[in-house]
Length: 305
Image (tube, rainbow, N blue to C red; front, side, top):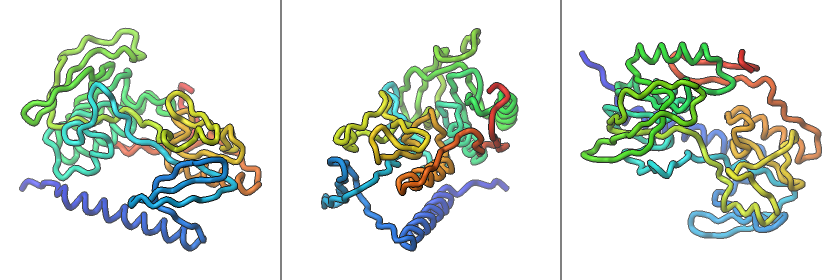
């Protein structure tokens, strides 16, 4: 007979795993004598961070060295902003209580391709819209891998529009009408004309990148500037332009490598240097995994690089 995924059970299992990981990390911190303060942190001045809890209690913490690891949030696009019901962020996708009949994914990068494979396997009719000429248009991913993934997606009936952007979207009768046009960003010198300008789906997931969580941190109070996109610059010791202040993880932006295991290693290097050692962060040979179907693994330079 027909087999249908139980989305409620799937989400319950996901939440159980996350809760277990949170408890495990909290226990590791406690066993290492690390004090954990939950709340919103703002740098008040050199050497002072204020933490505001959920019930608006304020507490000042003194510091000799500071490590900033605030990370990112999904990038919101003004032309089709998240409504968290029809137009979803990558965070929203992880909260769905039912498998959508149809799903358009804007962005054929790592996150977009991973979700495309997952929801296709769960039974959704999936379409990917990618502005560049290939899926996974990353320097670290060989073009051969992109071609193979496209072939496998076609076998799974995943529709892929490369050289294409979403111009706008309308919501009507619980459906999203998505207006397409030829991408001005593509690296393809001769992109083909679009076969259709409008596609419809029950949900649209926007997976075209992340934005920095650096505003409202009080960085200006210690004279720490970000670049125009909000990313924080750090040297090979992961120290920022302000002495004694370090930055690690995704807040360093796409010029570095936005992967969890890279952030972990950056944390070790920053902690060593904060304690007076001489650690250097080396980005030359980093393994990466992309959880598509089939999976893709990379390490070192791609053929093009």
